[in-house]
Image (cartoon, rainbow, N blue to C red; front, side, top):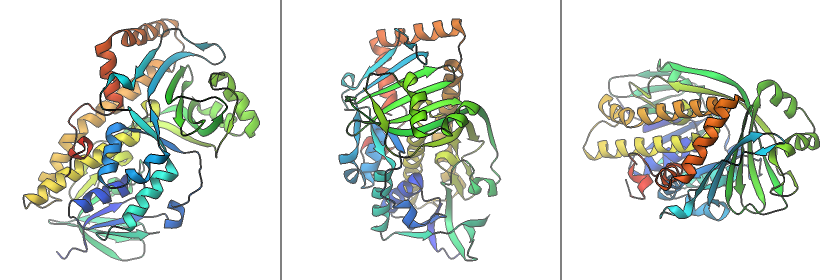
Amino acid sequence: MEFDTDIAIIGGGLNGTTLALALAQAGQRVTLIDAQLAALREDPEFDGRSYALALTSTRLLDAVGVWDGVAENAQPMLEIKVTDGRAGDGPSPMFMHFDHAEIEEGPMGFMVEDRYLRQALQAAVSGTDAITVLDGETVVAQEARMNGVTLTLGSGETLQARLAVGADGRNTGTGERAGIKRIGWAYGQTALVCAIEHSLPHHGVAHQFFMPPGPLAILPLTGNRSSIVWSETDAAAKAIHALSDDAYLDVLRPRFGSFLGDFKLAGKRYTYPLGLSLAHDMVAPRVALVGDAAHGVHPIAGQGLNAGLRDIAALAEVIADAARRGEDVGSDAALARYQEWRRFDNTTLALATDSFNRLFSNDNPLIRMARDIGMAAVTALPGLRRGFIREAAGLTGDLPRLMQGKPL
């Protein structure tokens, strides 16, 4: 089989571009196929979207050469406060509190605006000779063969690769064409997402306020700004999103409180439905899935992108090691090692976020009492508290080399 490229990545978002850079460093020729045009991906305007990157995720971004272009616009998360209550009543006196000073590695993570991360990744990809980008292009068919995969593009062209990687989100065409089944369900919740500018400083503290309809996350951005991810029932979210900006803020204020002073919108408003979506398998013959294509979870712990980046670090390491041994990088044996490494962790994360959301998104008084006592106990026990802090920083489990700050 004559190969046009070693690895074809379908999807040019954050996961796809990061994987392309990691694989290029491992000596692979990569073709990145994205339906979106480059001009849209490189838009410098702030649109309100931001990400909570665990400390180990920033190590990966540093290893692929993009963190230096992002760091000056990244806000360290120095503390996390988790509370429970109702809108307008204020939080329960029992809460969880995590401080980065309890670990030696530094901040638990950083908040980064989508525009800065996206631009840094696009610039790095453009400057890497081993990566070919096909903009405004789609994959309409794929066929796995004994030693490679043939992709048919929307333009009618075909592409021969050793391995195809689906980084194309929850509705992954790559996984569907490979016959990979999914399990999942909707939560009946919708996330309202925006950024706000407030009059008082946040001091690098991230807040998670659990209310019966769903959680409200207040995540610190640079300056006196914060990112808001606010979950409501589907019907309530639809009604709230339809309001004017001023009316929208009036609904948010009793949920938000006054601890950051007065605030106003800073950027656009978004909504997206919440649910669980988990692929039965992360691999098929000549195909691997990463990120949301493999596992879409509730944003309750802000771990969706971090889990995807851990997939990427693991897959890049498996491929780099296989290539060094002279193995076929798209072989069943190589892909089995990737799946064995990541599937258990991803399934555990999906079930944990699902259970956590069900536990906190209700108003049963007995359950409220039990969870408040549980949060207070975590805060009171240093060993348990430190374990949660290390988990938030991404420092637990079998870390790929790129997430340990080591080269491939």
